[in-house]
Amino acid sequence: MGKYFSDVVDKAIEDLYYCCDNDKAAAAADALLLAAKEDDGDACYILSRCFSGSCYSWEYHPFEENEAAAYAMLHQAISLGSAAAVLGALRMDMLTPELREIMPFESIKEAWDVIYEKAENGCAFCQYMIGNTYYFLDIIEIEDQKESNFANKGAWNEWKRLQIKQCLPWFEKAFSGGMILAGRNYGQYYQYGRGEYIPPEPGKEVPILRQGAEWGYPEWMYAYAHYLAYTEDNDKEALPWALKAAEAGHLWSWHIIGDIYWNGKAVERNLPYALECYKKTASYGNDSYACRQLGRLYFNGWGTAVDYAQAVQWLERDKEPEGIKYDLLGICYLLGHGCRQDPARGKALLERSEKSCYKSYGLGMMYAEGIGVREDIEKGVEYLKAAGNYEPAMEALKHYKKSLFGVWRRK
Image 1 (cartoon, helix red, strand yellow):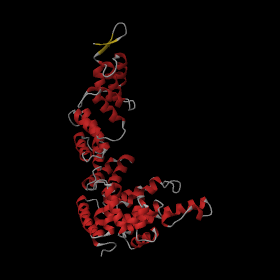
Image 2 (cartoon, rainbow, N blue to C red; image 1 turned 60 degrees about the horizontal axis):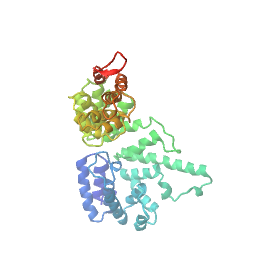
Image 3 (cartoon, rainbow, N blue to C red; image 1 turned 90 degrees about the horizontal axis):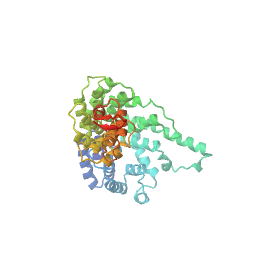
Image 4 (cartoon, rainbow, N blue to C red; image 1 turned 60 degrees about the vertical axis):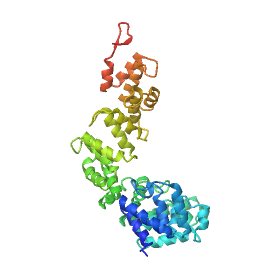
């Protein structure tokens, strides 16, 4: 038997949550699956977390999110008496009446006591779970508390405020004990506060970021590098942390490195290298920012040859509602650059963004050339002029002139 759970589960927790190593994580999941087949309830619960998305592990974990599999494992875990699964289901809002019926505990509090004892004995994973019960006020249901138990609403709110504060020592212990995820809520407690109960204290999360970075946690080396680069505008200090995080497998760190070489403030500007950095994270498929940056580079020919097809490809993978994406894609679809021409879509995209040189150029070409709209050279020229020093717009203006009668025509 392991120190806190079974040998398999103790090892799996270490390989899943105390490091960010995909190979170790995959091997841990294989071992958990075998243990689950032998009716290890805690193994079932940890497997259910693996299927529940990156918020239950880390951004680049090797498991595909599968809600049905997660619930099936959770159901099995609770039926086999996993106290961790009971608290996990409560936190995930998945402790259905059916699961309450099959759990072999008299109450949620009984399951909580099991995990609390393991937390007191030093299990960082359990310390994290106990911290969460306070942070998210799951303790209300665990303790079966309600407003009517208190003299007035003020007393009820004060009780909740004091409960939330109890998360801090547990998160601190868990984080220092190796539970990387504990740092998220630990830092957010200070950065964002907790609703009406705990006011934010911006800046207090920074030592937590730095602490996690110094301990070598990839997620926290990335977070600290991000803070240094974008909040402190300190690319020089951000770069080594971003490089360490990237080398440890945190792919989003590559877009920080890309930005540092794009900006050229702390290092010599190197757009070809920036492009390669963005590719390393954008290729994974969930870094919209890096996809957008690649689209800008290929569209403008910065650090590479102009390649509208590549620009369209990357910009289409950007899932965020950003004006620059709409501008560049709008121009490409309007003019058929790197894609099948679709003036209607191009116009719709351009109209979604705020004023910019790209938008002015696109709308200028649309009206001046009558692309998908009735030709109106005068209106087109006005838009092209509004694009300022944007070179394609300046070049396009050379093709139009005003007649003696003040009418704009093509030359």
